[in-house]
Length: 281
Image (cartoon, rainbow, N blue to C red; front, side):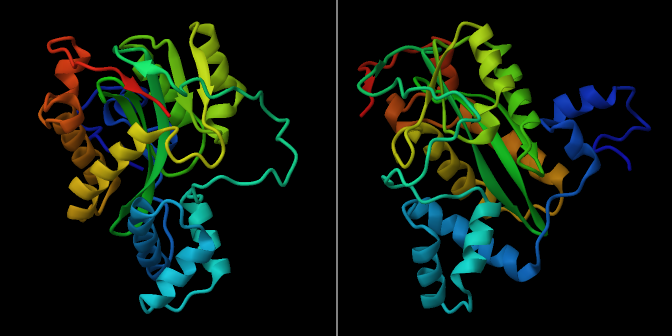
């Protein structure tokens, strides 16, 4: 299969092509992940509603879809939400034993004043709908400036594209604290070991806490409502190019109210100072 860059006019290696496109190497050879047309429609609706009500689990989401006129059952909604890597955000009782497959890291940001760049970075994965399928997007963001340090696309939830995003971000700097959720992509030894080797303190969200990774969640809202839902991407290449353009705009041209209407780029580069530390709950 031909790569996304025209191989007849490029002498770049496959690895370099993937780096330039922001894709994991496996994604170069595969189309976007697909589902039936009916399920893709439901997934799009679930994705939009989840951004508005992240506390909706499969039960409430099923009720909402039925009231909107869709014939669904909870089992189907559960499967689609699992495929989209969505889970209701609310405090949950400890009904099962802790997973012993990975080390547990405490949440380090409660009450912390975030007042400088490279103090705290965080990452997350989101489902991205396309015209005939879907992809997954991971991004690494600097909390103080909201600057998107790196991002990658993948057609699966494998860990490699998250590692590629991490390595790309570390080429730009090194944070004091790196915050993630407890997803398997971020709790595996390769990911945590890379952070520890760089002397970075690891912070992990408490299960069911809506605010622990709030700045990445706000990024997803902006990406989807300002770009994804406004465009009908037919191919992975089109999706990449659209995201590349939008995230460049987000970083360098889009004023942020929380940054006194400065851009993430200017704050991250130290061209302007944002007064007032941000304290975490």
